[in-house]
Length: 196
Image (cartoon, rainbow, N blue to C red):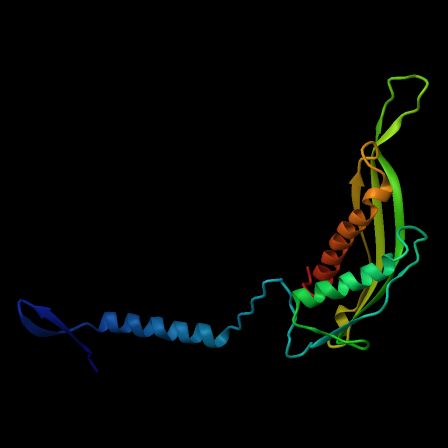
């Protein structure tokens, strides 16, 4: 069957056969239909790979400070920060126990170490540290009840430096711990629900 396309020429409509154009248009729409019906496009602003039809909840057990150092409330701070981060960046509901995703573990390391020594110009004074580094390690056990292949147990660590010549650890410790926790929690998030 031949298709006709009407064209306006010199004040008169004339019929003209143009099978090639019609075929191109049909092919274009066919390709679009196949493309959109065959593909499932998922997009997330946080980069998660979660299927919210399957995974609905998460739970976080209390993380205890087994490191022997750091602020007394460090375990509680980490637990609450982890909960807050997942609530802000996913659509998962936080429940007390037995979530679809479960997090547990402990803070296993808190160390303070010199990073850059500064030589003293006075022979009677010892060299001093120009930078001090606070490092925190957290061991996390992750259980995905909907996909047991993703279950894992990993240690995450992060550090921050400070200048002991201009400030003391007591003055900056809470800020350093908060920044370190942010880095560790982002790494946990990426490792568990973003699958990077």
